[in-house]
Image (cartoon, rainbow, N blue to C red):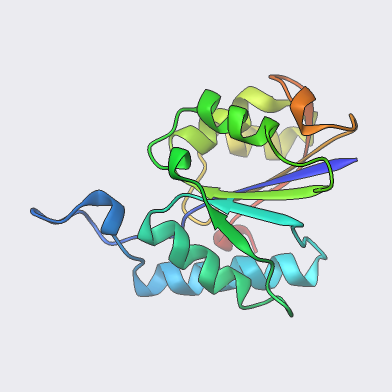
Length: 170
């Protein structure tokens, strides 16, 4: 079985004139929410083998706070293509994941992560699917499973929504 964890970055500061979007950092609430999601992951044995994230400051910071709950923290790798990506670009990145990784985590942005989750999910808890259909809020964590043996076989409507949580639902 393979598991994919999709984490939308935590609450970030609003864009200010003259400031690049990629440089936006988390708010105090965002830092707390990221740490809370990390604690939830650690306490529920949701430990990724591999973590990939956008190079944006807010995704980097989200992972920093979430990862503080793990001992040791899984290493993370920034992938340029994940910033301002489409769902199809993210899917292409996922398909390149080494076969040795059984649990992959992506820390990224909306609307692409939300659209990707909706594109991939074929089944799972009906209530969770309805909540996911409505919105993937900041610090929202989507956990999906699939049974085929290779990331390269990942395709639309191929995964089971195992759970969907956010700081507000914890």
